[in-house]
Image 1 (cartoon, rainbow, N blue to C red):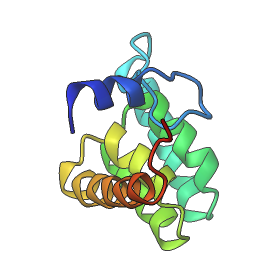
Image 2: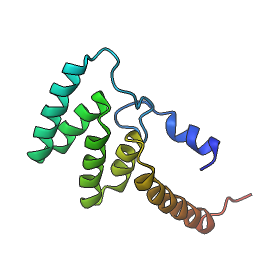
Image 3: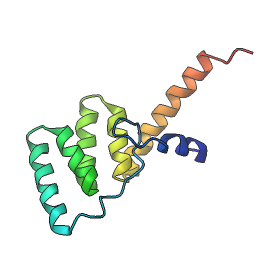
Image 4: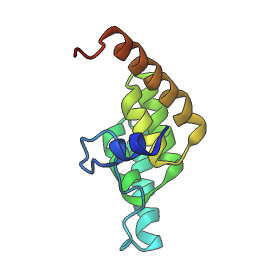
Length: 117
């Protein structure tokens, strides 16, 4: 992926955006608070409350939780949300195939819709 493409994806910072720019945990959390939030996130995950778990794991930067939530979104066919979570988890083995798929789809779309002059 080119630097221009990366910057285009990373410009958005809202929860609704494709790629969240702040992939670091909240810096004001103590280690004990992170543990408590991760435990609560795991409870939510085990209850099937993936959105709630996702929000906690993003807050704490818990990469394993982010990956597991990404896997659950993949199973549901929500590849873009999965890609976002894998990206935040710095899981390149999961992001690279999805990025290649998106790039392939964009290439097809561009070839079918050439710009008119």
